[in-house]
Image (cartoon, rainbow, N blue to C red; front, side, top):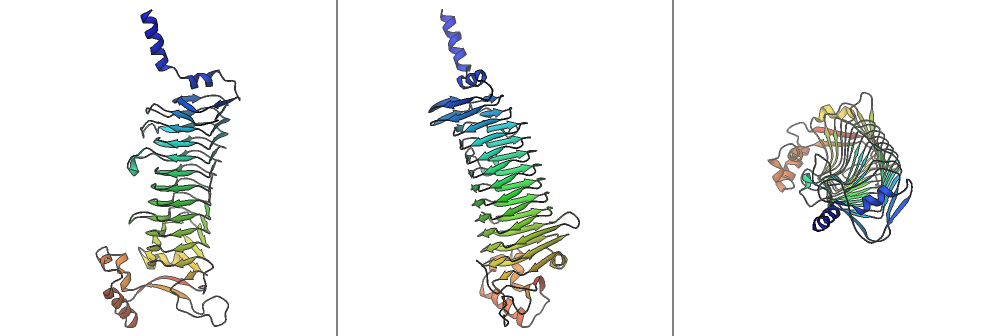
Length: 401
């Protein structure tokens, strides 16, 4: 009898009532979980709806993913999920979805999980209105709040990601990212080899980088607000070897750098379009690195930035950027015919006071009287030829804020 009781006790340690409910449920049925704690490390391998009716908390064992979905047509809704493992190699997640379609993950509260929601080869699915935070590790050691790998035609909407690492997409096309809020992460949004995506109406604040697009093409980013990217390397929006982008109606505010164009566009005869963006109160508004194809800037507002344009090789970069119809807060021309366009072109030069952009040792003297005097003398009686950074033939007189 003693051995039987010991056997039953040991069996209870390894049993999982929630997994047993899943195993016995009919395909396509609904499992409604009331308030309480449920053991995680479960696998959903059939079409099911699992929904919390109260404070239903699924807790992992800190060794692997809490919930793994291997079936199409699964819904996870209104659950509290925590306790994933901490393996980066295994990409331990609160919710891991593999090789299926038509999955909905909605309204869940995900905490203490290395990766939040991990889509591996998933299509036609939705991630909506979830709160996601990682384990309390250093920034680089956290997992990604949302990870896409070869996942296409999905919707990521109205999620709040906090103290995670990235929202990242690898080789993932035709997805929509909208109305999300990401804060205190590394890259709020990071694309690599991700094409034909739409990014709109998101707020990214207090991250190291707002949005960074690498080796991607045919992406539209509109109506996003990127604020207060942290650190001296803090960046609002960056493009590296990325082509045929439309960047429009975004607000890029209070970052160390507003925009970074690194060999972008990259594809031959491609164009990147930047229009109607508000680029405000950044240390550097636009940084240009090794341009090789055309970018067009029109109807943008440049206001309150410490410096407007920084180029690694100004003479080489100038031919690849067309500035037309932008507002520049340091424009010194007039509008005698009252058509809203300046009578003379706007020209941005790098005088002596721009040397701090190119020499870290001089940065200490930025804004001092000595640098201001040096700049005044350079304009009054130039002792060297200043570098021409930009020419806008139709500068706007007023900013349409």
